[in-house]
Length: 550
Ligand SMILES: [Zn+2]
Image (tube, rainbow, N blue to C red; front, side, top):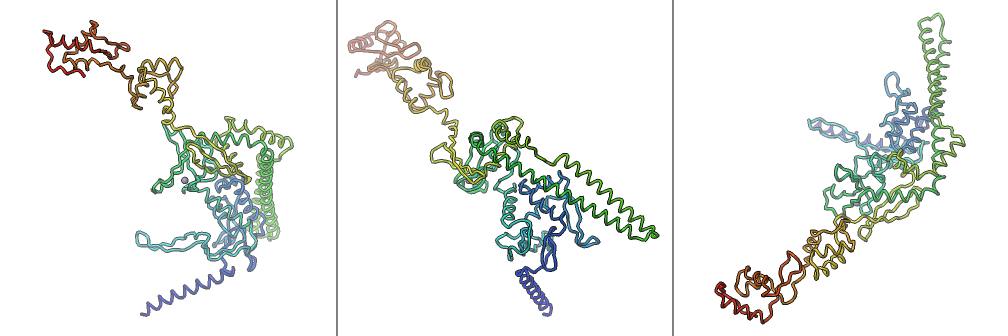
C-alpha cells in the first residue's frame, strides 16, 4: 500500500515538475545549453562576443547557401583550412572553446537548430522509453515534427539567420536526402541530364532514373511509386531519357543568350563575397593567436624571475604561441596566394565571354555531365512532365529560376511495334494488288516502284506472304468458271494422271498463270459431253462414281 502511494506520488511530482518546466518554457525562460555561437548574458541570449566564433558560424550558413549540401560545407571548410569551435561541458575545460575540424553532423545540427534564427523552441525532441529485445529499458530521443513543437517563440533573441532562411535550409536538407522516395536537388553522377529535376504531374513526385536495356545503357525516367509501394498502378510513367534531355538542351542553348551576362555577373559577385568572408575569418584567427602571444608574454613578465620552474614553463608557452602566429601567417599567405580570388577587369571580361560562349562550353567534351547538371540547376528550378491527351506527346513545363515558366512540347518516337507496323493504306494497296497478281509479281512491282519495308529494306516474297497472312488477304482467284485439277478429277472419277494427260494432249483447255502455279481448266459443254462418253467407253478408265455435271 505504502509502495503504491510512493509510486503515485512520484508520478504526481514528475507531472508537476514537467508542468512547471513547460510553464517556464512558454515564457521563454527555461534555460538549456546553448549551441555554439550563442551565449547567455545574464538572463538574455546574445550572439557570442567572440568575433572568430561568430565568423565561423556565419561561414557555415554562407557556405550552405552556396553549396546546398552539408557535405559540401564540410568539404569547403577543410579545403580552406578553417576550424570550427566546440564548447566543452564539464571537466577541467568546462565552458571553454575548443577548436577543431567541422564534422558533417555539426553542420546538420547547426542547420536544423532554430536558435540560430533567433527563435526559442522547446520540445524539439521527444524522449520515449522502449523495452529492448533483451528486456532492457532503453531511452530514445525522437525528433518531433515541426508543426507539433509545443513552444515556439519567434524573435526571442538575436540570431544569425532569418526564420525563412531556417525553413529554407531545412527543406533543402530534406530534399538532399537520397534514402527516401522523393529525390531532388543536387547534381549527382550519371548520364541523365534532368535527373532530380523532373516532376510527375500525376502524383507530384520526382521521377527517378533507371538504366535499362543491354548492360543498362538505355536510361529512362520513371515514376513507379505505386508499383514500389505495391499499390495497383493507376499510372506508370516511363520515358526514354534522351529525347527529353535533347529537348531541354536545345531550349537552354536558345534561352541562355539574354540571360548570360546577368548570370555571369551574379556568379562573380558571389565568389568574391565568399572569398572575402573566408579571408576575414583567417584574419580573426591570426588576431586571436596574437592575443594569446601577448597574454603569454604578460604572464611571463609578471612572474617572479626567481621562481625558475614556473618561469621556464611560461617562457615555453610564450615561445609556442609565437610559433603558432608565424605558422598561421604562413598559412594565410599560402591561402591568399592559392585560393583568394581577386578579379581583374580582364578576368571579368573573360567571364562575360564565357557567358557568350555558353553553347560551345555546354557541348565541349571536357565539360563533365555533373557540371552540365550544375549549370542546368542555375537556370531551371524544376520541370513538370505532363503526358498529353494526344498519344506520344509530352509537355514539359519548365520553371525557370527567376520564377518564369514556359511549356515545351516533345513528340516521342513511336514505339518499336508501332514503327514497324504497316499503315492501313499500304495494307489496302497490297489487298488490291493481290486481286490480280500473285506474291512474286507484287514484290517485283513494289521493287520497281522503289517502295521499301517499314524497316527500310526492299520487299521479299516472305514479307508479302506475311502481310497477306497477317491481314487475311487471299491470293488471286482463279478465273470464273475454271476448275482445278482436283475438281476435274472428282467430276469424272479419274486419277490425276489422266487429268494431266488430257491437259498435255490439249483435250481440255488449261492455263497456268506462271510456272509452279496450279492449272486453271476450262471445260465447255461440248468437251464435258465428250469426256463423259470417253470415260464411260474406255477400257482403261473405270469410273467409280462419276458425278453428274451441274
Ligand atoms: Zn507519378
